[in-house]
Amino acid sequence: MVKIFIDPGHGGADPGAVANGLKEKDICLMIGILLRDFLNKEYVGHRIKLSRETDISLTLKERTDLANSWGADYLVSIHVNAGGGTGFESFIYNGRYANKARTSQLRNNIHDKIVQDTGYRDRGKKEANFHMLRESRMPAMLTENGFIDHSSDARLLQDLEFLSVIAWGHARGIAETFGLRKKSSSSKRSAKEPNPTKDNGLTSKNSIGKQNPIKSKGLQQSSSDDKSSAQLQGNGLKSKSIGAKTQDSEKSRVMNHQSLSEHPKYHIIQKGDTLWSLAKRYGTTVEKLMAWNQSVIPEQLQIGQKLIVGESRDSMTHHTIRPGDTLWGLGIKYGTTIEKLIALNHGIDPKRLQIGERIR
Image (cartoon, rainbow, N blue to C red; front, side):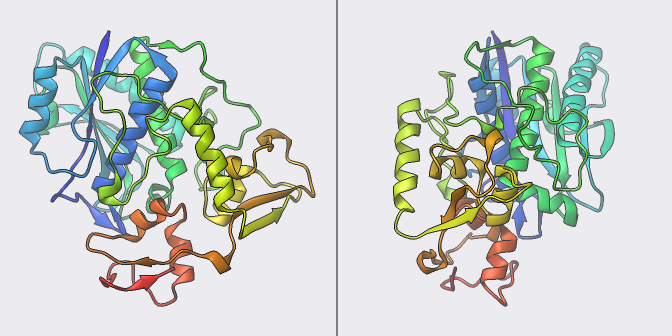
């Protein structure tokens, strides 16, 4: 049983890098949660522990102490870059140690899968004297998943679907590297399903893998070492059905449909439409579109078909800014994007939200 320790960087009083209305700590936490749930949903033969599941402060020593005391077989520390650049890079410890060759081989395999699945520019497989890599007793790698202060990377990092792509790259790399077995019930990705990197300026080398579970619903946690659900409300992030049972997921889909029944917004399918493109256009997700339209088959959209794509402007939700709010967090909370929030609230400054301000 392979023991994987996932460390979402920063948290609590330490936001990490901050730029473009985004905080590194929020992005790292979401990738870590998604990575855990992809592994638990799709594979067997492993156990998982996270250094944090909520927006809490942890010292670097506390993180490595947790991994070491648990007896982890592998550690991955998730981060987002800053400082003028673009793309993906990873690190292992740069010192001399007995298992360095194996550590490098494990990192290389996972690094390659992430680059393939995201289409990120490959900035290289690097070494550094980072605490998480130096003080961990097991092979460890640290990933830097795009630049929060680069406009193109930031647009991707505010997109929950793209964070799923990043997490899936980590999951696929870890699973293949450690020989985790696929669950027999794992659904295969349809060859016709839209490529989430298609419309963001990146070129995916393998269309995000043949069995990417991004479209699957009701991601379930199976490791007894983790809590039954991720408590993300503290930072405005919401995980998609994390820890939910299948029957709860079905109930949720029905309730989502009913909650929009009074004031739905509709779209008439036109040539070239996909659920991915509609989700991007209306500031929602593929999962929500499928929940609101129970009979829709993603690969068989019919021209002229009428789909619910959200709520009409008449029933638009308002939010009163509270301490700690960011447009990134609000976008995730309400299933929209930073661009749409800015468009709906003319004159709003993403970097200077006013407590008590009421926005749409």
